[in-house]
Amino acid sequence: MFFQLTSKSLLYRKGSVLLTTVALSISMLVMFGVEHIRDQAKASFASSVSGVDLIVGARSGELNLLLYSVFRMGKPTNNMSWQSYLELSKDPSVSWSFPISLGDSHQGYKVLGTTTEYFKHFSYGTKQPLSFAHGNPFAGIFDIVIGAEIARKLNYQIGDQIILAHGIGRTSFTNHKDNPFRIVGILQATGTPVDQTLHVSLQGLEVLHLPTLARNKFSANTPLQHIKYHELQPKSVTAVMVSLKSRMKTFQFQRKINTAPHEPLMAILPGVALAQLWQTLTVAENTLQLVSALVIISTLFGLSAMLIASIRERRQEIQLLRILGASPFYIYWIIEAEALLITTISTAISLIFLTLGLVFSKTYLLTQYSLSVGVNILSIKTLYTLGILLFLTMLAAFPPSLIAFKEANLKK
Amino acid sequence: MKNVEFSYSISPKKNILKIVHWHVKQGEQLFIHGPSGSGKSTLLNLICGLQTANLGNIRVLGKSFDMMSTRQKDKYRAEHIGYIFQQFNLIEYLNAIDNIKLARHFSSSAHEADFLPKVHALLLTLNLTSQDWYRPVNQLSVGQQQRVSIARALINKPKLIIADEPTSSLDQASRDNFISLLTSLCKKYGSTLLFVSHDMSLCQHFDISIALAQINSAKVIN
Image (cartoon, rainbow over all chains, first blue to last red; front, side, top):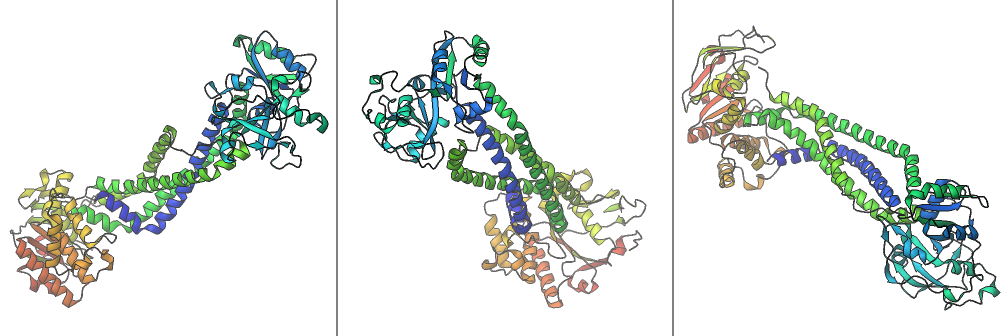
């Protein structure tokens, strides 16, 4: 009966209740949306690279190098020479290293030239290595390994042939039509930019940019090990991922790279650069949080005002309930329950719309911002936020509930 | 009531009610009249236990309110007192059945299995057809609303029915019908009826009628 009274009372005053519910739903949608995307972005960024102690590239900004080499975002950095890569890879402090070369694309997805060491050593999340859903690493010059997202979106399978385009834009006028690549491997989904990357050998990238005559020497069946070392040796690469034998030597090695005399290079620590990246975003993040909190608070004030106005119309109802045996506390809780019901409905509406919004914008966020956003918005944090919201609702409903309580307690 | 005095806390020296001794026998149908502002509603609130007297003792159906907590008074009222309001005071967003259920909700017999058949039987006795039972009460005629309010007051078979100017907005024919229906049902259930109105012409319908001024020795200034 209690629930019937509260729900039917709200339905009876549907005009004002609907407006309040819509206002609250919108403000909650903004708040939950900002929180979710922020958390997802943070988790996605933090898990994008793991086990790499240093990223080495041509001297530019730390964030620029991190964004371009790991997230394939931002402006392309200058290349570093192949010679420098060879020197640092032979350094006794280095456990392993692999070069990466960016610059080409396929239907807007970035092509990454690397060596087979990449598949052995690159890891993400909590040092999870890359694994193949189908196929194997590239072994031929025109072999290509694609990320899970690309395979799913473009419906590619092992054996399919694809044409790469020059440049990293979604639309390119220079396609390498004469040398299609054959898909030999599809990686398991990682939830990182790897899922949206096509991986080819450095030699494969080199041969694409050779003059036609020189290019014709190589066929799709040419194994990588049959290519003479000097024939397709790259002159430069975008960056090098480095793991050291001892982490104690990280700063020492970083200094050594940063002060290398023959080429202006820089080495960045991915973890530090990521923290720096979030540091720059903190102001925007805090502002968004503050704005959504203020919107929620102002809407709760609106809810409170709406309930206070309704008490004036409900004096007879309160009197009736008292005569029938309802205690003043029962009446107090009816008003509180009405407020909580509005908040609960608003929460449900906002979560449904947010989920739908994420379902429809997921691809856009992924392709435009390389941001892998999960659709599941329910988490401990969401429940915690919901708990705070319900508490704030009870606070907002306190004044109208108290007025109703006093109304129910006849004067002596 | 014995030596009952009541005044509002904002003007504690001005007694609204001062009743030395007054009692009503069980099963009586009593008409109490008095002008507006004479303290009729205050008297009813004291009898219901909604307000507490400053002095004196009030016993309703043999129980003294002095010894009861607010919670006990609420429970006692829910179980033993039926109330009919001036404007019938039905909750507009509930249908007839739910309005009657509400009276049952606060009593100890709230979960009786045969409650609905009892409501249906009572509504049929009051000539309210089944097609009107689940309609919101604001879609019912005034006459139908009257009957729902009577059903709500009687559903718990209370020993005391209080009617606070329930006929003030009715024409004479509806008023006569309402009173005869109410008095006959009170007789049927053996309930005591306290009917309060400023309209003295209604006294013809009751066995006993008194003016509030006869029992209230306080001087009330309107």
